[in-house]
Image 1 (cartoon, rainbow, N blue to C red):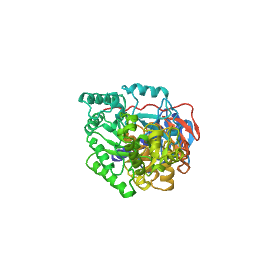
Image 2: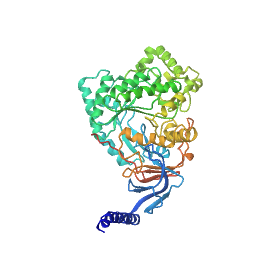
Image 3: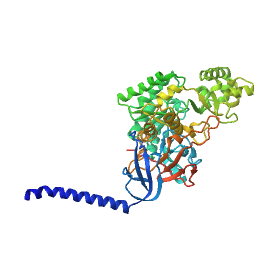
Image 4: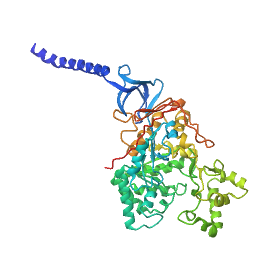
Amino acid sequence: MKLLGTILRPISLFILFLVTSASCQQGQNSDTTYDLLIRHATVVDGTGAEAYTANVFVNADTIALIEKDTAATYKATKTIDATGLVLTPGFIDTHAHGNPMQTPDFKNFLAMGITTITLGQDGFSPNEKDLSTWMDSVDAVKPAVNVALFAGHGTLRMLSGIGYDSIPTGQKLEGMEQLLAQAMDAGCYGLSTGLEYMPGYYASGEELNRLAKVVGQKNGLVMSHMRNEDDAFVEASIKELLAQGRYCPVHVSHMKVVFGKGAARAREILQLLDSARASGTQVTADIYPYTASYTGIGILFPDWALKPNDYKKVLATKRKDLATYLRHRVNLRNGPEATLIGSGPYKGKTLAQVATERNKPFEDVLMDDIGPYGASGAYFVMNQELQETLLTDPHVMICTDGSPTMNHPRGFGTFAKVIQHYVVAKKLLPLEEAIWKMTGLSAKTLGIEKRGTIQVGHKADLLLFNPANVKETATFENPYQLATGFDYVLVNGHIAKENTDFMEARYGKMLRKTSR
């Protein structure tokens, strides 16, 4: 009997544990009231893992409970029946443009499921030495989406007094390094470079490497609009960026191969990045799903016709040379029909149409009627097969490179297009992988904590939608049309958009990185 008692005692204790656990669970079911219950959702959690069904509970701005036993009963102040809908993290736009003080509603981003945008791109950030002041202003205006910021290399050049110098003094370089360190301490996620633009164009490899060291010391990322994205020069541009990767993680902005053709060419570029990773470099990239880029018309002009050079003097002394350069440059970029003017008096017309209307060669239109700073444009210079091959790479995430005011459909349609065309129609990406590219991978790459995946304790930036209903409606002819199909968009636990209705209140905040 003594032996039997010894055997039964642990069994009794185990049974008591089960009963106690059940009582505690029932107590939690009956006593806890959550702010929001999202019931019977198909959860695609942003990690790339297979979808599962669960009830997800939110308290304040945080995911409080994920219950896979959907029969369990809990109390909630508000319930959303998500039967037949997918629940994902809010999308993170790794490369965006816009001014929270001017367009805080950011309906273009919310409508396609974006809950966090990354500003300060292409080397240009707010023109402030103390970026914490600007960040406080963003919080004060309460944007509709969360905002993360990069310090712009070109802006730092101007603020430090280097400006357009190609060989800055050591003292001024130290001043720029100090400004970068201050920006990182204020909460910037890293440094953005725009080496195809002025004044970033003048930066040497030594300068960029010195700044990369500061970024690495502050646990940040260098995100680069590289020096040249043309097919003949893209490898050299990538290698320049990879050199900075000795000091910190590096990232290729809006990856493309201008004039390149085919999947094989894309694989050559991806192999270059894979080799760097095999050698220990942390390198990633983002991409938008369009074959037309968008930037200022100055991209067509030679550097000697751009600031700080006097354009009027260039016209007076080198007009013939400039005309020859522009004619060759535009024809190399698929001709004047492939340049769609996006701003200014000729907005919505191709360069070829303007030339016909003005009854003059297109190079004369560029020199006399537009000039290097008179417009922006969309440039149809990319190959779809090549770009789609880049898009499917596991280290490539999704960005818009768009804004509420840009005359390009990517600012209104990018993330919807990925789901509509590449998940549902073409089946180029499984839904779980596409969501990973738009959420978890982006948060991991940028260093955004507690966002990008559906986990207990993470912030409740969430989307509910049926992938089959998601539509990109923006076109090059009418780029300002909002995406459709996202039933609910939650930002920091609040419903920011329900079906076609946008809430009057705004729930985004300024995200600040901790530089460790």
